[in-house]
Image (cartoon, rainbow, N blue to C red; front, side, top):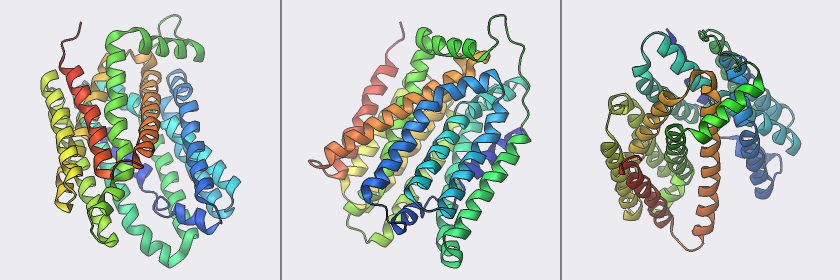
Length: 379
């Protein structure tokens, strides 16, 4: 039952019908492109500021409590967007959405790992997380497919109500999750003590630091590039109506990578490095092909990166002490946010001089560097 509840929580967190249409809502409310971009900045900064403090809160108080509160905050933000469509309401909604991401990040992984560990099933963590990621991708695809007819039938009000309902169901699912915490050692009680312990582990333990950096870079680069996949599709010359089909191909690849993560969990360092390198080559070749068929290679690449990210997270969890697990995982989340913003900035700067295919190939090279570093023996 634990695993099914984790999958349901991941699914409901992405089954938000507002996702495909909220930019239309902003445009209909009269927001400019610059104002919309500022909302994305507010969202990102909120998540970054709250990421590590919320992880320490989860360790000090309750992971399940944060998993309950997160969807409620996001649902309140979505309701605000629909009921009071204005710039400041949208900004407040993005603050609440960013807070939701920070509360869930770290707490979800920590609760899942420790509850599996308590059952003697920690070896299943990579498989469970991979399938949870796949559940989220499936939910996202279903939300996109349903958003069009639901929006046509009821407009923003019905789409917003469905999104709030998904959040409420997600919060209710969180309350059904088990949480049994091990007794704390002397000196580990209190929020500040947990925060210091988690940050110290992330900063001073070489094994934890390497695993943390690997999670941050492996998950963030392709995660940021995913936002530009539609532009890559347009560049192939297909009709705009066919671009979503190319995006779907890429999502299928990422979903397959998540489902295969459990099988790949035990791979040695060189095999892991070869996976990253092979995915990087596939991404560069598919992006540079300039042909729709190249999206099959892009899908293979994203599947490889998804698999590598889940395996990296599993290995990070194996190295973290239980007392500060959510805190350290949140540090990894913060690192991923920083890398993501760097990729956005770099892609924007390169877009004036490079095609989208060339930009994808350029960022694929980052994975070749990571692969070389992973393959080197640890000192």
